[in-house]
Amino acid sequence: MKVNKAFATDKNSLQWICNLLDNSHDFFVLKDLNGKVVHVNKRLLETLGYTVDELDNYDYFFYHILKYKEVGPYEDGLIIELTAKYNIRMSFSIKFSPIANSVGDKIAFLGFVKLRSYCKEKPEDYFNFFKHPNDVMDMTEEGVVIVDNRFNVVYVNNRTCELFGIKYTKFINAKFMDIIKKYKPDASENNLINGEKIVIPLKGSFDEIVLLLKYGKLNSGHWKTIIVKNITEDLKYQKLIEQTEKYTIAGEFAATTIHEIKNSLTSIKGFIQLLQAKHKESSTYYETILDEVDRILALIKNYLGIVRSNEEGETEIDINGVINQYLLLFEAEAVRKKIKIEKRFGDVPPIKMDKNHLKQLILNVVQNSLHAIGENGKIILDTRYYTLKKRVVIRIVDNGGGIEKKYLKKVIEPLFTTKREGTGLGLAICKSIVELYNGDIKIFSKKGKGTLVKIILGER
Image (cartoon, rainbow, N blue to C red; front, side, top):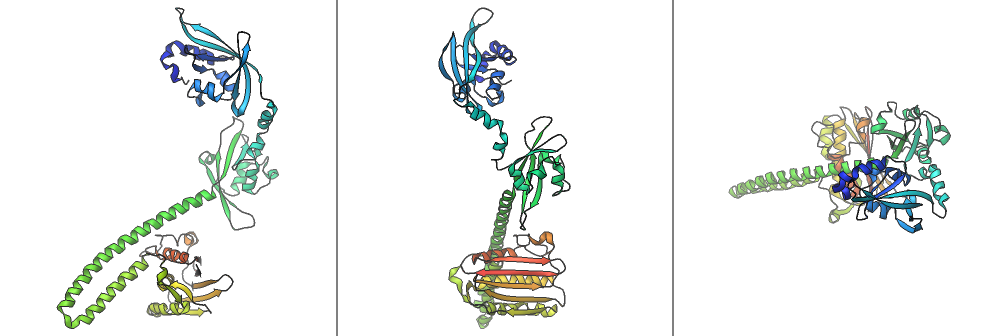
């Protein structure tokens, strides 16, 4: 039993009284010689709706939580009012008598308490509220299911029916685990202790929600309570945090790599400049080498994803012309692998965009297609403009090996790759670029059939 700090020093003289009072079916309050409440017996606590574990300080509890109020005299005692849980005011009579030890010294005052009445003007309002707990449970955001020992459903609140998309009449008296196993065949009662996750498809759409089912407080040996919580948004938030962490790692990796490459190129550039001064007759060659060093550094920065909005670099560009220009970079590899690149350019108006950003989009996606295709394959580049939505759509289709379904949602995440020598940054960079232009990138693929990448660009 918890002993209040206020009378810890008098434990030897008062503990036996506290134990005795807690075993009584009557109501008692114990005060020390200074008039401080040091104990309220269990029976009175239970009547007021509290337990010993909820108390830290009996005196504070008695005067502030119970809102002790003296109403008037009663015989040789007092009539008092106490506020029980749920704001129910109760009327008691209380009479204090001194307690003496074996040598006749007073050690405490014992209050004999008797219940008189509930003294709220309309106590039925409170009791009716708690007589109908179903109304309370129907106001919660969580589902509540009560089952018997055989796991037959004896009660479900409205929220549960909404989450499962099942009518109350289909729930009641049904075997709860039979309902769960329709969504997760390997679900078990034991898993409910730690939490069971199931996925529920939403009717009339392709969306789905994730529910966490877990034992609530066990009411008794006859009934079990199961709490149903929609954790779909929690999981999305968790995934967002994970993706943010990956982007952070990718950014740190890119920055570190660029720094090291820059250091190496700076050294190379310095030695070339020394050679240029020594061999002035070959100055033109050295100048070309220096230009290429600078160009390589710029290309590496772009490829590793130092993607930022640079409005100064944006100009009205011809989408079809830029794509056509950079496809020349892949012609040699396409011819070597006997891959046909087919262009289907539509009537696309000029779009304000950084030319290097469009170049990165085309290079990354087409390079992925070339790696996925064997000999005699085919790549189709298609451009279209949707007037109503003011969107430019670039579609890149290949008949390569495709992407497994389990990887399809992950390929755009930073650092995820199935290639032995891949960095896992290419498509993540593309995603960052299109978002700068209020766009999106969508990937559709089927293993063994090929892949379609849609790049959507719009005006800012």
